[in-house]
Image (cartoon, rainbow, N blue to C red; front, side):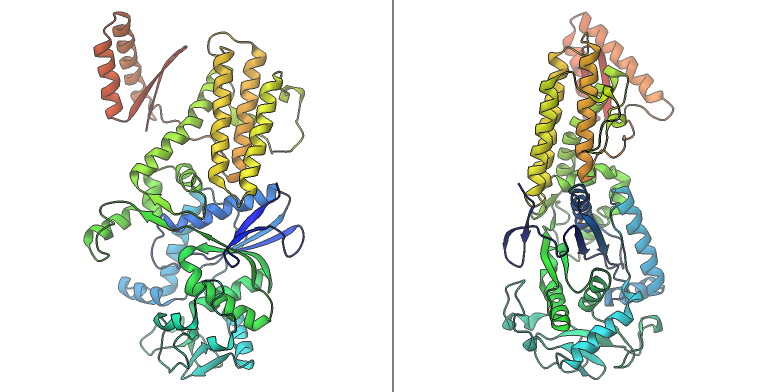
Amino acid sequence: MSLTVYNTITRKKEPFEPVTPGKVGIYLCGPTVYKPSHVGHAVGPIIFDAIKRYLVYSGYDVTWVVNITDVDDKLIIEAANQGTTTMELAERVTVDYLDAMKALYVEGIDLMPKASEHIGDIIDIIKRLEAKNIAYAVEGDVYFDVTKDDDYGKLSNRSLEDQEGQRELQSGEKRNPGDFALWKAAKPEEPEEVKFDSPWGKGRPGWHIECSAMAMRYLGDTFDIHGGGLDLIFPHHENEIAQSESCTDKPFAKYWMHNGLTRFNTKKVAKSDASPEMQEALVKMTLHNLLDTYPGELIRYFILSTQYRRPIEYSEAEIAGRRKGLDTFYRLFERVERITGSSAYDKATEIGAPQADASSSFSSTALSDSCDEYLQTFIRSMNDDFNTAGAIAALFDFAGTVNRFIEEEKLETTGSDASKQDALLATGKLISVSRLIGIFLEPQAKKSASDDGVADQAMQVLIKIRQHLRKKKDFETSDLIRDLLTEQKITLEDRPDGTIWRAE
């Protein structure tokens, strides 16, 4: 099955055929850096990081651009509230965002241009639009005349009559209600650092023109994929298309991909936007706080477990459910390491790369065939509009097969060395396939003991007491110990070679 992509502008899945064979250009709308990012801001970068990884595996040379909006009304207002400069605020929030991306294993971004560094590119586009009589200046503001674009609204399927509610600065008089700002005249009370020289006087660019300028600067007049959240379809992406294509007379982006929005399913967030409860809940959901609470790999796995066009239901209960799913893999990795004395992470190799030695060959043809089958199922899911949820389902089946192989071969009690090696190789291949979407890139810190070992020593005492009770057939008391530990989010696992524990 060849790769297909759902294109928002055509509203159907299409075969993926890049503008330039073998090369892919991707532009993803990045953050407006006026406040710390929340979990919703991680969705796009994680999804497109997985997409880039898969495209690279598929043989494409990929350039991925994510912009930083550091010139915006929101920045001016927030900087004033904090008693700082817009540039200091933007830099501080950008660093926080980049730290979060690193923790979430978002490693594929090639360029992160800032709007403030591309004022010249922005002015050039506006001048070209003005020369075509598509843009017009009024008292230092410059607007795009939507009536000059015959197919305006083709992305969002809106008519010009729908534009009247559009929020735009209107210090000058617009020709049409739907006209949007390309350049905004500076106000006397605004800080000098956001007042840029232009042919229309000092001012700053509109939001939409910033992305057009940066996308075309690094990816050309026409590129392959433009991504962002569903909330950006209108007006942001619609206006990007209008101004870019009116400027160049060429298609802007070939494929428009939009990820579903994040729904915050908590009682606190359900309250009014102005309530203290709402503000408290949103603070807890900032990426910084989430990463203090949950491992980055868990958040990444949580997001990729939903097909990207569907909404992501965020709640602590949803995160806990995904944690259990992720622990299925961690338990397998621990199990194989306990049986073989080797880490499956060390056996993971680049998919498709030649094997380094004869020890990388399976003795079990059936298990080897199963590994190949799951890889193909994984690939079919990813080729179907980058369905990471289906790909992860294939990984679950893969893990189940390895666990059954361990049990059927009795590898935890007897079992041959060759079968143990097969289990190790299969788990290594599972990790290799998983890395095509950026999970299991490195071993996670083990949670079964504290740094000084005291917690593990105490748990070993409880495990021995419980074993003693079971030998005496005092199952009521032994079960009570297990249940009390479960209430403290500590799980006991009885295995043929002993009992182990882990804390959530």
